[in-house]
Length: 230
View 1 (cartoon, rainbow, N blue to C red):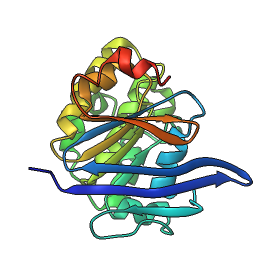
View 2: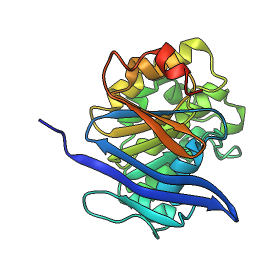
View 3: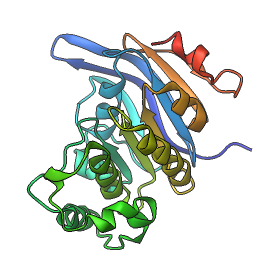
């Protein structure tokens, strides 16, 4: 039995000025599914996430949830409809504490229950009064994901979450993503192929702005097979 679709991208085209980056991209995400996007740097993966989340304006195509057409909405409106974006840059509000960063997330989402955040990332509770500018890269990533799950989003778009992180944190995030998929659907852009293959239900390979393969079975989703698209 097929799970319901939580997000669908149809014929998506995006350009930076005269430079076209995405070409007729089609993608589906089902309930409680982890989908990964792999490809070389510059292949359009981040552009895809930014186009879905409203930070870029596609030139044509559709991005839709079961209830809404997202094209034309502002990023905060898309987030309110349950689609949250965690960017690659690990930017937090550096002059604010962890507590204040979470308070901003709560204010935006109306969700002031931080227990799920601390369940996934107990270290954030210990660091609650530390300024975010003094956090390590891994701790910032925890804070960004923790902030994003406030409001119980239906879809999480996570860009290069393990880049530059210690293996122990990568291992922890692997379990977090699997647990998060019990309550949301995830699209993850990631270069760590062992992680991709360990957590993904499906994998889209993107090359020069086009989806060139969709890997669906455990036999297909293995590091050596994915590597040909990097």
